[in-house]
Length: 395
Image (cartoon, rainbow, N blue to C red):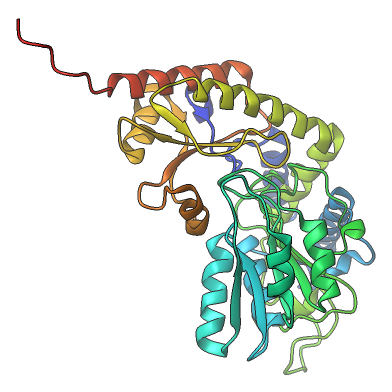
């Protein structure tokens, strides 16, 4: 019996812990049938490992519309690793970077460190509870900036940012554009070649249905990123600098080769079923969940009910603390959610939930209508049982 037979897993925005069987099998098959590392030798197993890695890069390019050489896709441990590589490798002392209130701590904390260590000027574009952007403010902040970071989809609101429009404004101002695709890749159709982005950070363990420890950074041809890590690449060993050719330029050390096999299988599974179809499935269930939770008087729904972006619904209970709701949903009803600030404190400031946090429900490829209805009923039971009734009047 699977662990997931007894639970309703609604934490896909954190990790796609429930994966297609093909993903798990691909990892096992790789470990049992190959087990080697790409670029570490010329024997048959190392060659096979290199083939798997190349197929994984090519599939990511096909799935997201990355143009040109797939070698411009460098494997990373996750989106945080990719974002750090892009930010530290692009921003120089005295540069200015524009970030937004919708960003994850992978951007917020990295920008803060760059400010302290390199004197990089950090400019934050404000946001709103509905996920909108002030384009006039963006134009002002982009003047003289080196880089704009855009979170493609908020992991708290589920709303997409207008990345294409912001990219155009950034390029008009002479700035590069780095897109955080952690919550969009695999969830929504992407055509990076048409969008004009310069760098895109991916993670493998969310919408792409891979396992933890996988991710990637795509760097547009003609743009150079200084390596975040240095070390062995399997070739050009006499060089003291990292090799100039991509992806070796950014790939120091032994990567997660079994993870690449699993990531490849996850992306093949997605491509066979269609990103649009998977997105529509999530959008319909999101609407069902949003409407059901909104009908509960003891619940305040924070995230907007939009069909675009990620299938995320975020709430605050009126009758109890956020951690208590999440704990009781788990222990009493088997509904697994994510309480807290979701590594996105600025978004919670916009929502007024920075002191309480919130409970996030995030839907995945295998979520069903029955599970959504059971989750709504579970919330109603838990918050209803915590309702404070007025004292009875004396007889």
